[in-house]
Image (cartoon, rainbow, N blue to C red):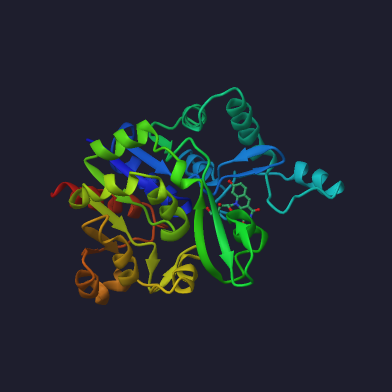
Length: 311
Ligand code: FO1
């Protein structure tokens, strides 16, 4: 049995903790977004891979949702002494990950290989696969006609400016990793995690052939809505949907995902929209999707697996 998850950051990481609780972790694979990746101070930072790794290892900082718990910021403070770019906070513990990843990439290792080494070092029994070993970068167009990198928008500007468009530079040339192809095509259940549909799931779908591979197995795919009661639990997904002219609701998500998956899991607060989700072309499952209480994520993963495998 295999349970494969198209994953971004925080929401996907929480879902994956449920999946490894519900199933043998060795049968769980995350295909993870790398278009948030950024090179700063010469270091390759992979935020979504690290958020998934640290969360699954129980080492994530629970308040920030990114970076490591018990973190210190001495290196950033010293960087500030020189007027260096410390707008993107790399903690002293977190720096160890970026130093290692960067050195291994410099040795010629692929991001898939390095991610395997990092997850093994954290004792993870499930697999985290970068969607591609090639460089793709989310670029965001703003209402003031600038185009900036994702982290500059998300962190540098605290996503405090409206967007007019998003593109994934390098996606056309990116190659879906062979391990990701194998995982997606052979999965018993494929789940689109409750991640930002535009800048976390969007880059995955932009890598050539991924969307076709997912659509080809639509009936064995389930999506979990990242929008609950018209809002995102964390991050700007609701605003970005509206700024791109889409509806920030489970119905808007269903319109975006209906060709990719047969089933959409929505939270109980959206129960009255279940029929509208059906009209939008997806089979709704209504259940708790706010993964704060223990057991919710595992129950969600089990329900997704059962829906995908026709239990
Ligand atoms: N998010 C912030 O809001 N501020 C930061 O300074 C910041 C630093 C950072 C460092 C490493 C890392 O893996 C993630 C980091 N994030 C930070 C989160 C990052 O912007 C993620 O891309 C978002 O969480 C969206 O996935």
